Image (cartoon, rainbow, N blue to C red; front, side, top):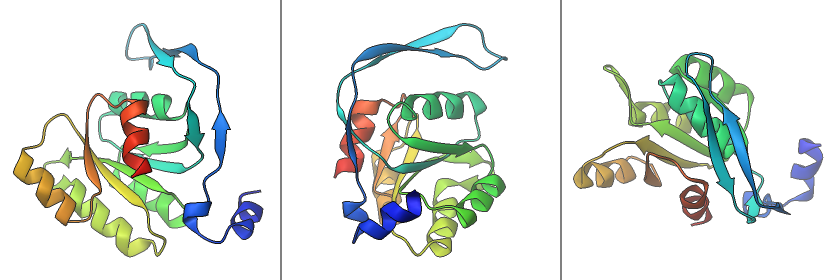
Length: 164
């Protein structure tokens, strides 16, 4: 079906399909190493069907981001650069979210550089972070990121950023 859809559209900007969803409260069960649930209020908004790739070395942060974004988007997420690159070689994606500080030897700009050299198709790229200095935000944008998304991630902010 994806191939048929791509054949019917002339450009990636036309590759957006809009859906209406009904508002509801969604309860998300936490991973086995965490206790409890999280309730997310889901508003009726028009959604974009896009494939999102997420790289975050913190499994809990990755879990929450995937659960939240999967309410309206196709998502795939990984905790290592190797898994991310392996998946990216075999699949297309429209947006990538990369945690800013992955390991002492790996930061988001290095991963983005590898992804850009791997894919011919243009994609939007965002850094996920708890805190980034204003001058670092400018450096990240100069290195190819569209913007920085500060945690906690929300659907409303995410959709506003990808709509630009």
